Amino acid sequence: MAVGALSGAAGGAAGQAVNGLFGTATTFWGAVGQGAAIGGAGGAAGGFVGGAGNAWAGGANFKDGLKQGLIGAGTGALMGGVIGGITGGLQYQRQNTAFKKFALEQREIARAKSLEQMRDFNREFSERIVRDIPLLAPEMPPLDFSIPTFEAGTALQEITVWGNGNVSGYSIEKAVNYLNANAYPVYNKETCGRCARAVRLAIEAGGVNTTNRPSTGYAKDFGPYLTEWGFREVDLSNYSPIKGDVRVMQNYRGGNIAGHMDMYNGSRWVSDYLQNGFWPGPGYREYQPSYRIFRW
Image 1 (spheres, helix red, strand yellow):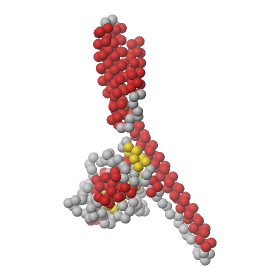
Image 2 (image 1 turned 90 degrees about the vertical axis):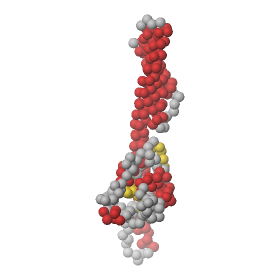
Image 3 (image 1 turned 45 degrees about the vertical axis):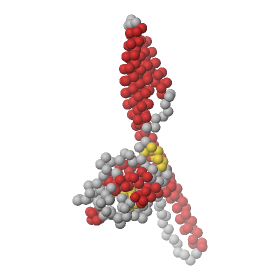
Image 4 (image 1 turned 120 degrees about the vertical axis):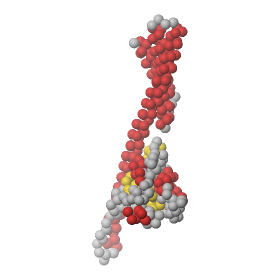
């Protein structure tokens, strides 16, 4: 019991000492390495004290006890390093997921607050017009002034979110500028056909880490990943596009199995070429497959 207590104390002290040498891990593998170092140090110290102490308590001479301590240290370091590395990685993933969820929740709160503030401003402005214009022109009939609803997109372009382990601000302007600069003026089957890649690289140019993306590479599979990156899905009823909207379109019978993906640049939809009209091509225009819209 005494040897076990000393072994545990030595392992804990060594682990704490090594832990003090590190700062907060900022990457997954950094957390794994840090956990392995702490666990290995604690395991080595505890293994040495336990191996040597039990040997000496059992009547072994100093040399044999020292040998058993070194064996215990090696075994403890190996086991402690493996367990510590796994624990460090799991803890990092847990913290990363929790922080990402928190950041996205804060972003939605900021979005809602900004939208509500803009609505309040427009409501006040509208009421002022309704109140003041008849005073300036009494002959005017009463105004039926409907209060417009505005999306607070511009004010939210630089909101920071946690995405794939990186805090990054997203700029719609940078994304659209990249897309416009790299799009072909017209569709050509020899040069076009990589719409998902074009839009993804534009989003990345805007400041979002797109490392985590569909393994298929199919445009039609990007919806959940856009949400994970920080975009939100838009209700299609009475939909009106704004700059930066990303559209994920499903494939149609006889068409490319990958589907289609494009971004609205403020005046037209663009993928790896400048598209004409709402639908990206005659097949899509004929079959009109389903699609989803995502907005930053």
